[in-house]
Amino acid sequence: MKGTAGPPPGRPPRSGRVPLADRLVAAAYTAGWAVVRYVPERAAAWFFRVLADWLWLRRGKSVRRLEANLARVVGGDPGDHAVRELSRAGMRSYFRYWMESFRFTAYTRERILDGTRATGGEHIFDNLARGRGVVVALPHMGNYDLAGAWLVHMGHRFTTVTERLKPESLFERFAVYRERLGMEVLPLTGRDGGSAMAFGTLARRLRAGRPVCLPAERDLTASGVEVEFFDARTRMVAGPAVLAIQTGAALLPAVLWFDGDGWGIRIHEEIPVPTEGTRKQKTQVMTQALAAVFEKGIAEHPEDWHMLQRLWLDDLEPRAGTES
Image 1 (cartoon, helix red, strand yellow):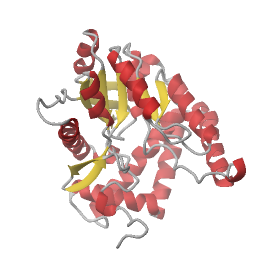
Image 2 (cartoon, helix red, strand yellow):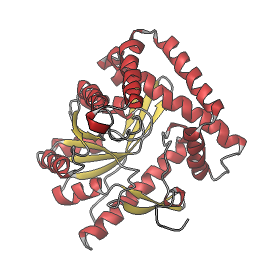
Image 3 (tube, rainbow, N blue to C red):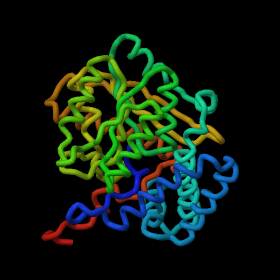
C-alpha cells in the first residue's frame, strides 16, 4: 500500500547512471532497515520522535504542506497555534510509521494481532467466505503496512500496488519489505509507465475471490475522479470503484490510526454499485462515497493522516503555458 510514505521519485538518471541524491536516499533507507530493528523499541521511538520534532521546528516545505492540508481538515489557518500543534503530532505519527517499518521483523504475529483493535472485519471475512473478492480502499493513515500484516495473520493474503521509486533498487527494497509482511506486491506502473498489467492482475485476483488493498485518496493524473473533499475539489483514484464494477467485488472503505502502542482499524460497510448510469457515472458516485468515509475518518484522527504533498486542485501549481 504505497503513497505518501515512500520517498519522492527522483529525476531520471542520465546515461543509465543513478543520480547521487537517489543513491544517498536509497542508502539511508537501507541503513534504516539494517540498524533500527536492533535498537530497543523505546530508544527507537524516542529517537524518531526527536527527529520528527526537529524537522517540525525547521518548518520546511513538507511541514508547511502538512499544515496547509490539516488546516482544511480542522477549518483553521495554517499559522494557527492549534494547527501548528496538530502538525507536530502529525510529524510524530509519520515518523512512528517509519520507525515501525524499519523494525517490522521485530513484530511477531501475536504482537500484531494483540495490538490491533479492528472493527468491521466481518465485512471482509464474510464476503471472502462466500468466495467474493473485496477491494479495501484506504487513505494514507496510521500504519497501513502493519494493518496489511494483520489481514495476512487473519488468514488472508492480499494483493496491493506500490509506485515505482527512483532508484530502482529502492523500489525493489519496498517490494521485498511488503512481500515479507505477506503481501503480493505489484508495481503501480511498468517501466514504460503503463498500468494495464497491474489492473488486469488485480481484476483476476478479485474474480478468484481474493482481497485487494489499495491507497485511494490521492490521484493527480488525468484519470483521477474529481470529488468534493473537505469543501474543496480534489482527484481520487478511479481504480477501486472500477474494479468493483467490473469484477463484482465488494468495495470496502477502511480508516486506520495509531491506538496507544497499537493500531486501530475500522472497515466500513460496502459501497454498492449504483443500479443506473454509465460506468463513468457509477465510478463518480462510488468514489465520492469513498471520499465521504475518508473525510469522516481523517477528521476523527487528523494527526494520523500522512499527507505531506499537495492534494487539492486549487493548491496545485499552474502548469506551464497556463495562467496563474
